[in-house]
View 1: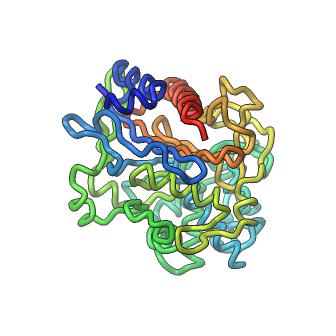
View 2: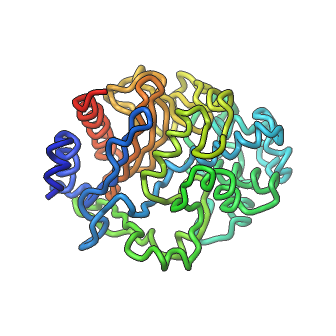
Length: 372
């Protein structure tokens, strides 16, 4: 049973979470909502794992919801004139020039139009260098037109972006993430690679995650110290979901962090503009528009069918990113709304997209009841 005070204040959100628990889609949810910088919700609901409550401080795995952080690191280098968006990857990684991939640019990586989606990177069982070698030696997909064909890259292109950062800065990706972005935003409990001693200190704060198989939740061993310590720029960031919300609040403030600017307003505008428009995504099976590393509201192509959307109440300017079958972070410049949430049950693509639509619509209605 959820907290009665929360249920009274946010009845629609509570119903979505409670029904999901009853149906075995998840055992808990972590949720953060703010509007114009005012925090409306910052809590955990249900259980993180058996006997351990989910709370606002639980450290959860964001999966692909963390991809925009890597994109912002790349855009910081663009601001510093260390790269151009239309630079070929080979300017920084010459060995990438194999198998017809020579013309792929940084912009293509950020808009998922590069054409090497299905490389088996070997993560987390092989080294970063081995993953990169596999990606570099892979051929361009058959029939792919670079910059025109579209298909979401779950992991491969993000290792390439991480390697570009490493070669520019001369230090490891997790250090770049922490020093250039997380610390300036006071995201102190967010990690791209969590040190083993930190994992020990967190203890039960490390959240669990489940997969729904044959209508039952099965625990995944994705929260162990070894896995938490291995960086994957597109999929292994973890922290309290409120800190993902803080990241989007920074973007709504046009790049301003709590103490220093992280991006210029011009760069934020570039990130959130529609760079890929009206293209059918061969991975996600739907027409979806992209900015630079973020998904732009695509309700115009079917609000009831678009995967990882932001609900029927968002404006066309809303942007963000989802994590596979589990999480999402997004914001809407028109309403000042920031939303971030994590469900600890990977319920399957269909079930999760229905859950996403339900929770986003419930948030919009419950927040509207609060008034301005």
